[in-house]
Image (cartoon, rainbow, N blue to C red; front, side, top):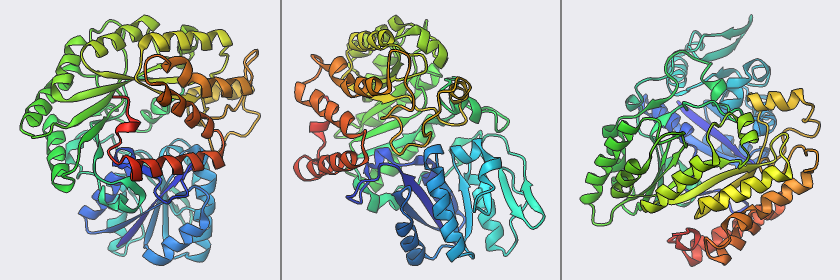
Length: 481
């Protein structure tokens, strides 16, 4: 059986290589591909602009799939639905399935679309069972996590508990990304766990944890992570660095320390040690210095920390309960232990004022980050903060902008949409100036400006990728090390 996996990107670049490196692949559909391959399916990947029906038609003609699996976030759903509707009209023999966060959180509306089936929550086991039924000639039915369109209506099956043994999954399929990735080898991503122990109101995790029973935040064993690293070393001998994907590395410190010891032992046997990075959520009252020292010894060279807002009033709305001093102290401890700090900051939240923004700039500067990931708040459907914005009447403009997180959906009293947009563009300069070389600061400002428009965004990314590929393929010019 041949299965096509379709991923839409809002900012797909004209160069045809929309993913900078394997560090930025969609790890979820990579796991689904390897799981399907483990039961004898062939898989093909299509990465397209979310509204490119022509590329989808070409993909169907070239690969002739038996099943097409789509994934979409809220802002991509209407475009993905249009593509699926055309395929259903021209090729009714292809079985269409949709999953992902939007379908999981809005199944009743999504199942009314052109899809034959819908997957709620984790998809590896359900899609493997679906493929097995189709390969045996059965009409799909009675699979937990799956909704099916049947002759007499929609068959709504219950969900299964969250997968507890993440080690049981085959390693993600990375090879299927070859034609979409610019740098295919040096930079990788490995998933350490699934789920999040926190309940941030702007994120969908607080809703996703309610779709199934069982433990939501789960971790892979260090042994299994190390086995994947060794697997990647054979596939990609040029590999230099790995981003370890997890909501927060500090959720289980004994586990993190044990993993660090294993990574340090492995790196000691390599001629050129691997470099690691990871995400850390700051929790008040925890002294991270011992962990940071272990991380540095293991080969970690950067951590991501979310300040998000420097206003404690705004953070309360976001359900992020820490003080500015907690974040600043954690950043200082990380730097003292030899780790770069890369800071996440968000502007344009409901009720945010210019004074709140000034507090964000001040706290951000005190963290002295080497890199800044700044964005404009976007109210994703299925989140509590979306519901709050809707209740407050803030969602009068389009909710599905093609460039969400760069253009504000609404303005606040005294802090207009244009002011929020300008503030986000200038944030790299306001926070990074004096901490990193000025050319890199200005590069980040131009990048933030270009991202506000589809044309300039694509042109900027094409130029950046050309420079990366032709002039500095080692990426050193793009890192702040």
